[in-house]
Amino acid sequence: MDALVRAGCGLHRVSTEAGRFRMCKSATIGTGLPAKDRKEARPPAMMSERSQTKKEQMDWMIPFASAVGIAACVGDVIATWQLGREYPGYNPLLQAMSDLGAKGSPVAQRASDWWIILGLMFLVFGIGFHRAFPSQKYASTAAWMIVLYGLGEGFGSALIPETLSDPFFALGNVAHRAVSVVGVSALVSLPFWVAKAFDGLQSPFSRLYLWLSTGGGGLFIILFIISEFYRPSGSWIAYHGLWQRLFVLIYYVFLIRLALFMLNRRKFLSM
Image (cartoon, rainbow, N blue to C red):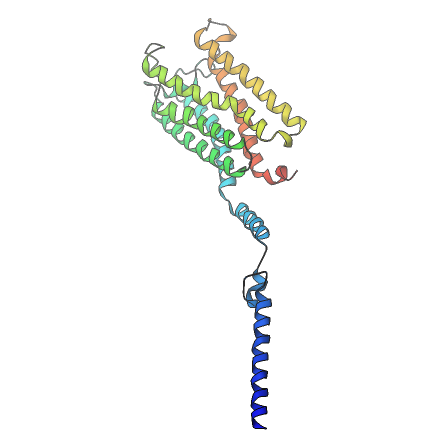
């Protein structure tokens, strides 16, 4: 009788342990985690989407870069205007902005310091633009155009100043114009890359504005180049500085729109 009781108790323990095993096994099937951690398990796709959203929300670089880009455009207009006022005899309608930083200019050092800062600001702006649209194929190229503009017209103008007393084809003057051409070419091409990157997201007004900016900027840069070689006294062609400033102003407004577009990217990319 005692043997039967002991055998029955043994079977009961075996069945109890087997039941516990089945419960633990069923708790881990499909999750790979203990039962206590089942509530924390999420499908990989859901976790990826949530982490991506959280990453975008925490990416402070994008609004910071947008603000820096706007400050660079507005600041450059103010800085060149103020430096021109402090340069005796300087005529902003007839003289280029590079004359402010030319060797022998009374404001050359301050102009060069500002252009270094400007180059750094456009570098930050370009990096932020890339981070704002990492999945847009041509947005990376547009970001590089912003960076190249800062390198050419910012760092290039500061580190390789013109010498107005030297001949046009003097080595230093040629080098200055070469880096300037790189910056200006990048800025001129920027609307084309933006158009390719966001072709399906643009309203008719945005497309019209883009092409008007490109056409107006192109016209003024052509007039600026012509007036570099041909400046008849008293002719409207001679307004060398005016054509350059109008070109820069048009594209700075375009860059400010890009900076604002960065801040509203979720609205447009969800369309």
